Image (cartoon, rainbow, N blue to C red; front, side, top):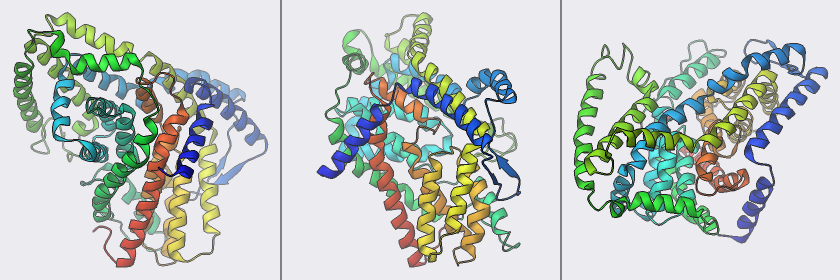
Length: 502
């Protein structure tokens, strides 16, 4: 690793780790947003919505109305916060599969066939593809990647970093079309019709580019993991408790001499086939019970994929535990679920305050105002079309640090940038793909991304005193390389005149 880069990342890590405990940080951020909303409201900070022309003014959360809103919504802010329910449900099932020894035995077989760069590429690739399964990548793949890497003799935090880079940094890329493609194309079409009423942006408008991006992102992340991330992590020792826990899981067969892992795996294999047949029966036609008249991507099955995974993991873990002989009764199943939930206490406290902060920031309108004013600034830049496109990528990446929802950002930015860039010869498909590059690249370095706290909690399982600065410095090389590599790919693609999609 080059010394300047290492010094810079060390500086980022030290600066980030000087921040207080993540839970305390979110408490302070809540206070900061409350104060900033009052000041901004008093100063009359506002902007106009680029589509409707509606005046968006900073909302004072310290007013009587604001305080009433806080009191009435504190509970629902927490209970409706997306990362809370999905993570707990996923961990309920995965905890059973993990504590029965099933995951460790399966992963032992996996690491024998996928090692070194191949293992990293496989993890990142799986993370990129997981965007089809909503939030499953965050709550299923990331913790599993840590276990996979540790059993392969590598640093578990490198597994978390690689998986997070794929799941979140590579969110826009995929081999298949997904809900995000439909949402973006609909917004792009409406924006393009401001210039050309006959214009229509296809759901597959970026398909070819994103298909290639899957392999580009996976390769870049594999290189970054080996070049920067793992060398830096070599100085971070995993907590002894985590080492012991993983060792016990990995070598569970030595603890129970009468256990039959092969018998348990065969039983799980039979159950898996039956489970897949049941799922397939629910997806075979549009009227099937898991589709309810919708296509597979927008079906109840895909919307509830985390629940499906959790149920499968729970039943597989229980079958494995009983057949292998590691578990003697149903009480072991309950103990495994309770133990899994007990490890989530710190996570729940963190998520409570993170949920309040995200809600306060949205209510204050400060994020929207920042996004719109950033868009206005870009429109004032008088530059050639290719440079405008590159600048737009960086603007989208910057705005992504403050506004979490990709669809919400595009709904704000598309009416400004799609028509503007169309007038200088850039088609809406190219503007849309530039937004996707900028939006995805900085997902992994902003604490305002809802699942950032989830990743931090997973990392702290292996190093309890690990701070936010360590995670940001760990993910920053991915973010920079993704943005640079993806931008160069887009420029080359457009210069060659290749179609972005169809």
